Image 1 (cartoon, rainbow, N blue to C red):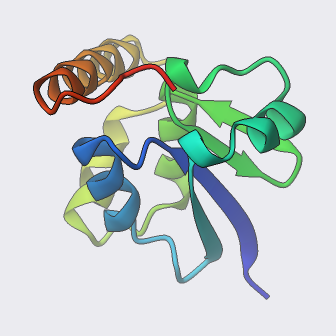
Image 2: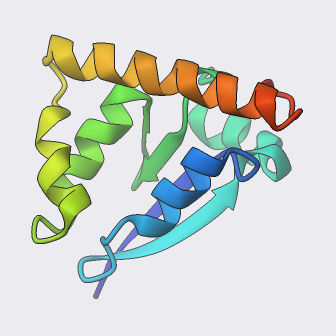
Length: 122
C-alpha cells in the first residue's frame, strides 16, 4: 500500500508547477497535488500557522513541512535515479546551503510571477 503525500504549491508559478509535476515519487507514494490558492482553508486547518506565502507545503501523515524542510523531506522520498533526485542531495534540514538555495529559488519565484503579472501573495 502506498503512503499518502499531499503537496500544496502555487499553480500559477511556472517554477512551482514544473517542479511539482516533475517529482518522481509515485513508486512509494500516492501523491496529491493541490493548488494552494484554491485550498487556503484546508492548509490552515491541517497545517495551523504555516503561511503558504513562505513556501510550498508538504503534508505527510500528520506532519507539515514547508520551504527548505519540505525539500529535505522530499529528498528522502524522491527517486534517486532521476536528475531531480540526484540534485536533491543539496537539501537537508541542517544544511546552510539548502536554506540559502531555497531563498534564492523563492526570490526567483517572486520575480517570475512579477514578470508574468501574477500576484506572488496567495
